[in-house]
Length: 295
Image (cartoon, rainbow, N blue to C red; front, side, top):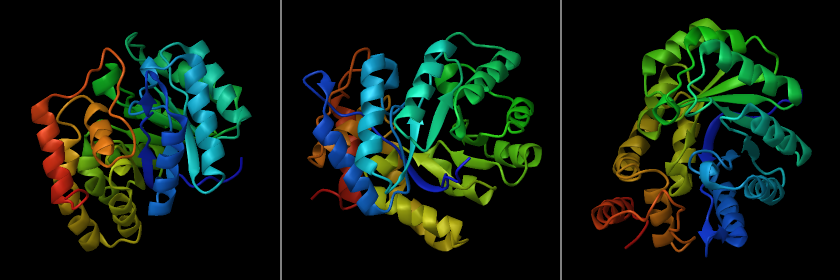
């Protein structure tokens, strides 16, 4: 297995739409902006990328665009998540075919599998391709939580090398470090606690805020990895209002609105998501002004 950089500032990319279709040119522009700002990794078609409302063809389209546009300048961790294991296997095969660097694989949402079901789901993905796998644990979205014991069992499989932990529970970082070993990569899936997550043993963040302020997020993660938590905390303080604003409504509604205010794409989302309300827009606008991103 070829070594892949899965640490530092990684952005959970939005999928920009225009007139109900994937806006390919806007997506390429967003990717170029990310890389220029120092983002080391890109995650297309995760939760923030609205994977749940993309067709299978669109999902593959977005991953292919991202790999081609990144052109080796950043690690591409392709979303390959589904609550249907067979579909996840197809997405995993596609990610390998187009030469993504790694895969992000989520727990089975809605169907609430047992811990053994979760293990078998990820083990099947491990068997079907040769790419490193990042397990995505986001119980708030899936109603399914990977236990520390199950994660430790999965970590023994050769290509399961990391977890994106969006539980918001910093104690889990220490528990998982103890159970899985210090070499198992832990990535925060929650922007507001990203610095604390790293201090507890994490190695980076798959960030929503990185869509809007990639340079700030990159500098903050670089500081964390260097052990410079004084600098990291200063940047985190600057980002805190934006972190809060981007989750004032269902993700990715606020982040798409923020990017539309920066002139980078439309704020179009797909049903059952809708445009954020005026109060949420004011909150996002205020955070953008606070950070100096708009006048």
